[in-house]
Length: 322
View 1 (cartoon, rainbow, N blue to C red):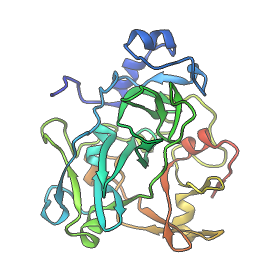
View 2 (view 1 turned 60 degrees about the vertical axis):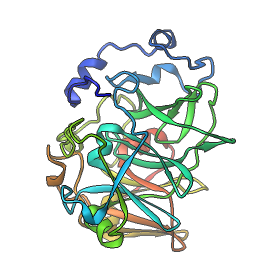
View 3 (view 1 turned 180 degrees about the horizontal axis):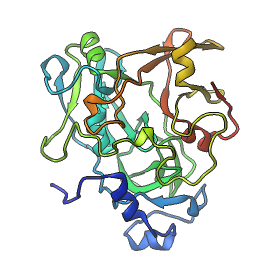
């Protein structure tokens, strides 16, 4: 069903979010069945992002086309690449920007491919938890400018950046991360010409290819964020967060671009040829920001490229290596 939701812009979201109360009673009045007596964060930290529940609709029945058959994607356009066993899939940010979550299954493994534009965080999760398979949607809420997801089975609320349930029946549970990375369409097509690329179910549903957050990653401050800013690095500078089991490692993308990075078996290699999805109105024309490949002893590991303010908000005690 086509939703009558206008094009999302930062100014539009700010207007909608103005005056929104962070209050479980208000959330209940919106129809949430979530058990808000179980919360691991202060409810005052949660803000309305503007759209209502599922106002940014997840993709639950994804469609794909072979990379070699596509002509509407520019070479430098950014995609989330996911490879499981011998199956390679790509999820263009031109699509994820408008949907934020794809509930998919790859090689029999239920996955949630997620992208938060306000945090530039691309993270893939295993949707299985304690014998059940969860399906995720968007709450329309933010914490630290980051997407709060919900599962449709229990209506628990989940922080996208951490993969942790912060409210509801499943509060405290954590989703398993699956290694993925941002690549250009040209790189994916060359490596996986028959690889499946996500395409819109209805190309007219949104203005796919347009960036509704034009100029966002060049702004001085993030949207709907009032927390502490990082020191010695701009709030909107891109950083690489390695999701190491022993704790996160955070390195500025500029440091990686200049000198690479290697520590305790981890290696980050900078790769040119990827456009920003949050720069110009046309994603294909976004300025060069590049991407990375992160490995540990030669194996790909879970990571993401986000903004410095996000890394600092969720890991305030971890220094950003610059």
